[in-house]
Length: 178
Image (cartoon, rainbow, N blue to C red; front, top):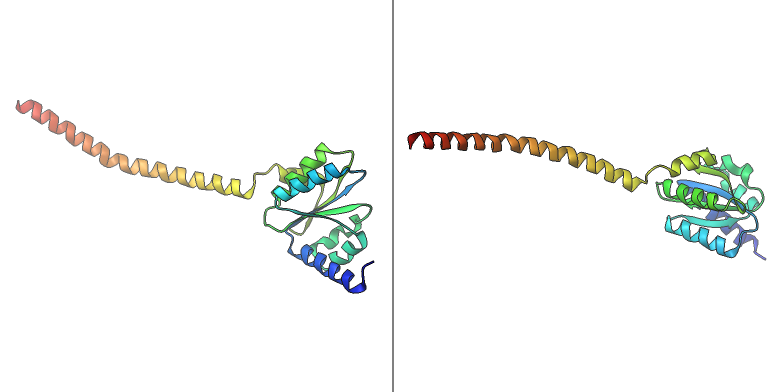
């Protein structure tokens, strides 16, 4: 059994995780097999997300004074938390919604917190359909580069066309002189 000091350390660690997290999903599970649990953990690990089963009382206390306080009434039953400390909640949303769709009989979505706001499952699915931050940046860079390439092509066309006209005039005058 844990001592009071160990419990306080656990509470402080969980509070710190809640304060650092940009997004989190509270999920429940019933009769989940070890294989399914490992599958979920692997998917979340690939997405760069931490996942842990928490005690509800400890989680409610840790949520006090953090954005997760809004979700404290959802800490009931078997609860696990998936936390994303990065600035991109899309990967977390994609992993959770994919697993929830594949395993509806054992896995339930309770509530999510994204940038301090409570989100429901439909919102998580909408977020999951968005491209990731890296994909958006690459698309923007492509559009910027595309416009720059067009500008360079247009600007280089003027001297090229002038040179062609001068060459044709020179050929005409050379042909007339002969």
